[in-house]
Length: 170
Image (cartoon, rainbow, N blue to C red; front, side):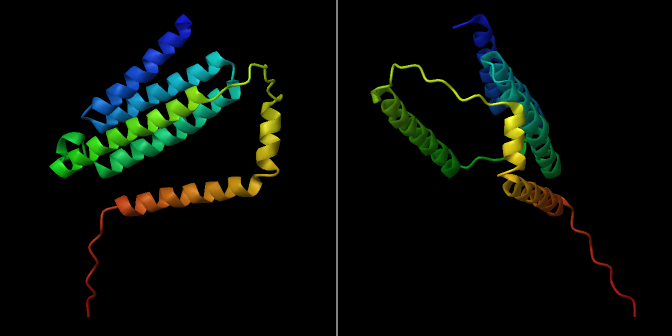
């Protein structure tokens, strides 16, 4: 394990844990941005430059803006949210289910006999990814853009305050 990997892991896990524990949702969103930047740094460290820049564009750029818009539109902090006892029970069951699923996945990974022969990865370039997205997957890319635009407009409509209707004068 290298020193760079250790630093990136501490940044990612520390900021994600801090985001989960902070009461202010704006601080949580900003700490998630730090965590996502750490993941992009990990991709750069691993030699996956395109994935790192996609991480910065998609998560740090777009998704963090969506999270911040959602937080600002709802105008609630975690201090105002009350957690009932049934919700706490639900969280405990969620943790138990998560540990169980992790155990099953871990068992499957460690029980698998992996080939010892080196596998060569295909040569993938940024140009090739762009041609694939704009060629064979152009319709899906456009549909995703329309879906995200509709979701953003729906969020704006739902978050807008209701205006009182004007009474008609006769």
